[in-house]
Structures are given as structure tokens and as C-alpha cells.
Image 1 (cartoon, rainbow, N blue to C red):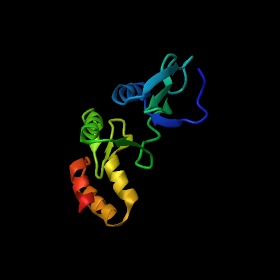
Image 2: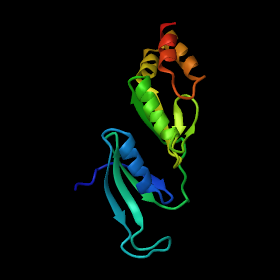
Image 3: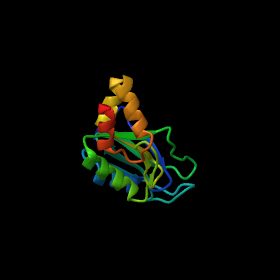
Image 4: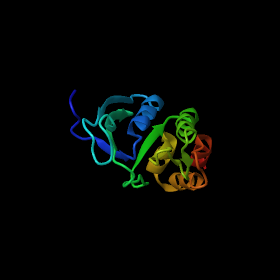
Length: 159
């Protein structure tokens, strides 16, 4: 197995394998590639404890490190998932929030491990890219939402 030249490294307390399995089950083009265990006892654990997990999320290579509770996830890093319609938006939002996660505003949510996700319908991204009044209307509509309502964004785009 060839190691990726660049991959996202995510720190977990002790749940890297659990999180990686959830992401692999939830998102297409996602999988757990390998689990690496401690070959011997060490100050924070014992031989056989999971140290790292190599996985992909929507084709993006990641490594989860069980590094203890010293480092916490923050909104400074998030996965942004582009969705095609309300059904897909609901599917991912509900999977994350419904599995012990938390809603936030403007399409943001956190999974139960504290990792931030942006579930962003393409219609919103397109409106923002078009700029002008269309972007302003879509932006103002989004600012009132938690999970993005695709129909409301499309209505706002049209004015």
C-alpha cells in the first residue's frame, strides 16, 4: 500500500477507528484503509491499542491519530460537503446530527467527535459565485437557517 504524499491528520482522544468507520459508512467513496496498533506499552496506553487509522472521506485521504484529549477540534477546520439537492443535504445532515452531533448555523454542524462539517447545497455556492443581488438574497436567506433549505435558497436566488 502506497502512503499518500499529503493527507489530512485529525486528532482524536481514543475514537479514531470509530469515527473512521462512521465516515466510511456515511459517505460514498469513503473507506477505512488500515488500522495501526501499538506494538508495545507506552505512557498513555498498552500494546494493541489503536494508534492511527488511515481512511478516506469522499476520496480525501485522512489519518486519524488517537492522541489523547490534549487537542480539540475547532471550526478552524471543517469538511465541506457539496450536495445536489435537499434529499442529499438531509441525508448527510441527519447522519451527522442524528449520530450524537450538534446543529449550528448556516449549514454547519459538528459530529459527535467535535469535527465540524459544512453541508452545502451547490445552489448556495452557485448563488454566491454569481455575486450581486442574487448572492445577497441567498446569503440573507442562509443566515436564518441551520440546515440549508434548498427550496428557500432557490426562491431567494430568483428574487
